[in-house]
Image (cartoon, rainbow, N blue to C red; front, side, top):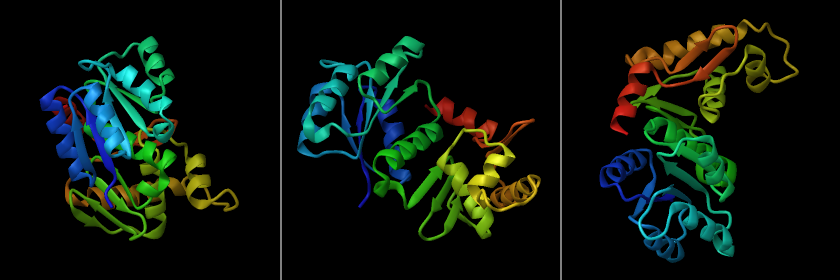
Length: 239
């Protein structure tokens, strides 16, 4: 069964964009245009995650989140706040009302999908343990299959474990030593430069389709999973 995500947002173009990308990523999508409608829909059918706009007609997103947290059946319902208010006090207020994450507009759709996956893995792992996704990458964990833009990518077992670790922590920079511990294990003694060899192999496999590089090298720090600059700019423009 597909995870069901409820979008609570009154901007129709943004709702259309979110629906398109979420359905493409394998989610079932519902829509509510205001807080009252959202609360009714949640009672009728509990979603697996709520994407909740801060500024809503009738009942604000902050109040909707508070009511969700006061409801015993929905107390643990994952909520990601969407808002144009990016100041630190606003972010703190959003999280203090009970939101699990907070995304500031305009945002990259690939970043939002990564955050959704991360929240679902953390709070309801059974929903997302099968598939990990970021930008145009999708990993079927149980099927041991990776695709990019719909085309299969053939990886060896070590490259698969390396990509899985990066997909589970998009945007986070890992040192070579951290990747060695996570992918090879703390009791395996190999040179830290081994990571560079497998990163090169992973890049070669992922980029064989002609897509941009999603693995970023951070000088003197390590590696992270980030969309290529042209992808990031295009998605931010669409959002």
